[in-house]
Image 1 (tube, rainbow, N blue to C red):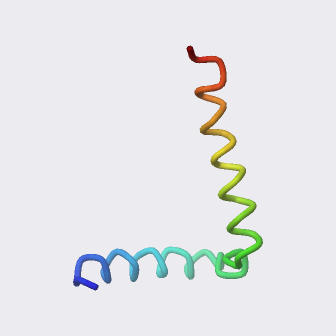
Image 2 (cartoon, one colour):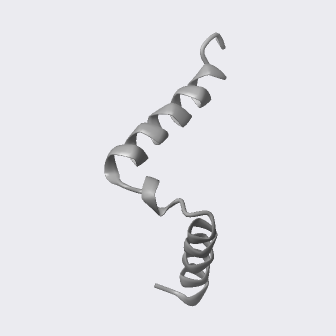
Amino acid sequence: MNNSLEEVISKILEFRDERDWKQFHNPKDLAIFLNIEAGELLECFQWKG
């Protein structure tokens, strides 16, 4: 892993920890949130030709 990627990951984890979001970062909740966000994105294309 290069330094810039490690820095980004470190900043993301710091952001998460400052907000106490780690409790929501488990496989079940991440899968649910991913599907919700994907569904919202799909709505943008629903009626496009």
